[in-house]
Amino acid sequence: MDWIKSKSILILALILANLVLAYSVMDSRKAFDGEVSHEAESWKQVVAIANEKQIKILEAPAFYKERLPGVRLEYQMYNPDQIAQNLMGTYTIKLGKYTNSMGEEMTLENGNKLLYAKSIPSKGTNVNLLDLNMAKIKAERFLDDVQFSSADMMFWNVQQQDQLTMVIFRQYYKGLFLDDAYMAVTFQGDQVVKFERKWFNPPEDLNYTRKIIAPSKALFMAIDTLYEANDLPPLEIKALELGYRLDSSSLVSSVKAGEASPYWRILTNSGKVYYIEAQY
Image 1 (cartoon, helix red, strand yellow):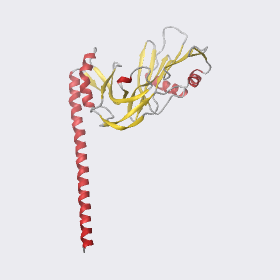
Image 2 (cartoon, one colour; image 1 turned 180 degrees about the vertical axis):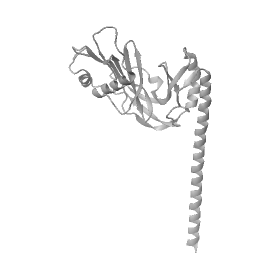
Image 3 (cartoon, one colour; image 1 turned 90 degrees about the horizontal axis):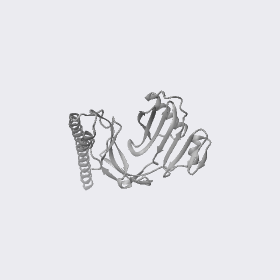
Image 4 (tube, one colour; image 1 turned 120 degrees about the horizontal axis):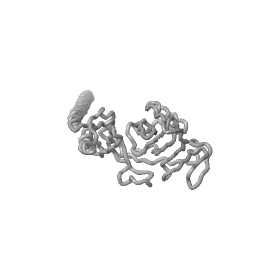
């Protein structure tokens, strides 16, 4: 009889526990839905404020997390002989500069920034600029050829000036940008005349997280700065992205590794980039 009573009590306890768990899950979902709805409304309001100041936002951020893990970043270091072989084939070395008879040269800055250039004999003042899509395709082929193409790179933009076309790729980690990590391929006509690369090793996640401000708040914090810097309205925000930068105390050229902090990065149609600290 006591066993039957104990069994009944246990069953009742399990039922109550399941009800509490179900309520907790439903409450969490309601809270999450409420936060999403609140952020969507806040975003609309901030966009309206920006529009009044002739700042247009082309699209809302595609990626946002309320918390991000701490991350340690370390720049890739290069084996210069191997890189020179991939880029130039034959070469000679003098005072740290790699050169050859084809007018090519390669140098490294601080061991982590690669600089390559090639002199092209002038054939006149008229050089046909590459079509933007073709420039991107040719840049990707070049990176494949020199063994620098990677899954963590993403196309950033194309810039054209003074008969040169520069195609820029940036590094990303789990959908988050890694600032000051880039590859830039520059063409004169359809010839590569310059290449720069600065890249991180795979990031190391640290054992803590940081709370992140919502994109609506980041945009609101940036509006006045964007408005004051807008000489030729309307200004267009092409991208608002979440990612990491090395801590400001570490932003010197000799630093090769360090702990990174979360930032929102704003790219405008003028090519300028603005940063908003994302830690709550």
